Image 1 (cartoon, rainbow, N blue to C red):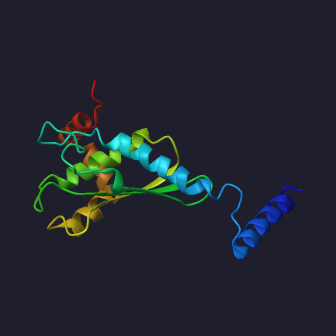
Image 2: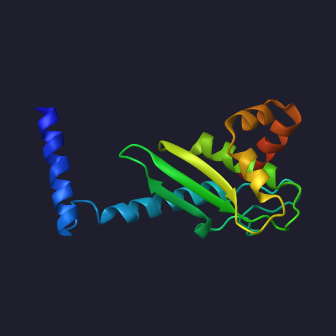
Length: 160
C-alpha cells in the first residue's frame, strides 16, 4: 500500500509539474532554502579571522550572498559557500576555509553536503585551496595537528 501511495504522489507531482501548476508546498521550497541559507550565514559570520581581532563578517570575507542552499532530496541539502579572502595572496585562506568547514560540520542542525570555495578570481591559488578545503582526508589530517586544531578552535569559538 505504501508503494502505491508513493507512486501516486510521484505521478501527481510530475503531472502538476508538466502542467505548470504549482505542487503543494512548491512555493514554500525557495523560502525554506533561503531560511536555511540565513541559518548557515548566522553560524559562519561570527568566525574570527586567524590574524585579526575581527569576524569574517566584519572583514566581508563572508556575506549573506556567499551562502547558497539547494535541496538534494527530502532529507539532504547541499550547502555551498563562496568566501572572499581580504587580499589575493592571503596566506590564511586555507585556514579560513577549514574554520568554515569545522564550524558547519559541528553546528548545522540539518543533514547536508558541504562545499566551500574561494570566490572566483579573488585569490592567486584559489584552485589549489579549493581542492584542499574540500578534501576530507586533508581536512582530517589538518585537524590532527594540535597547533592547527587550537587555532581553529579559537576562531570558531562563539563570542560571549
